[in-house]
View 1 (tube, rainbow, N blue to C red):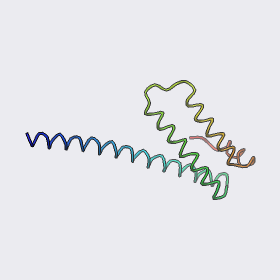
View 2 (cartoon, rainbow, N blue to C red):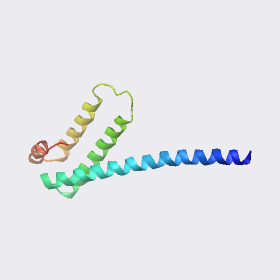
View 3 (cartoon, helix red, strand yellow):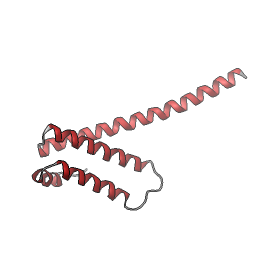
View 4 (tube, rainbow, N blue to C red):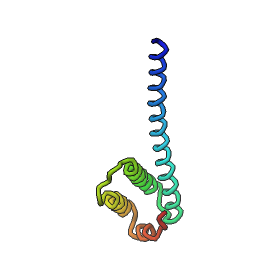
Length: 109
């Protein structure tokens, strides 16, 4: 009986450990993608450090939202467009007019 209980606790610990690992992996992926896009944009648009931090935060939020959408089975119509629209609004607020026009020319992946 003691071995069965120990085995159950071990299996439960493995389950929660794998869930935690997957969550950490997705956070790392979001941060890496946001950092990568921010760096590419910095080279393409040439903005200052304050703008760089704001662009990174905007893309980090965008990447997290798109990742969350992938994990949802039924996504309402227009949700993706709303997320893209929010990113565009944030970028327009962060960048100057000239920079924003350059941003619109940036090749989307």
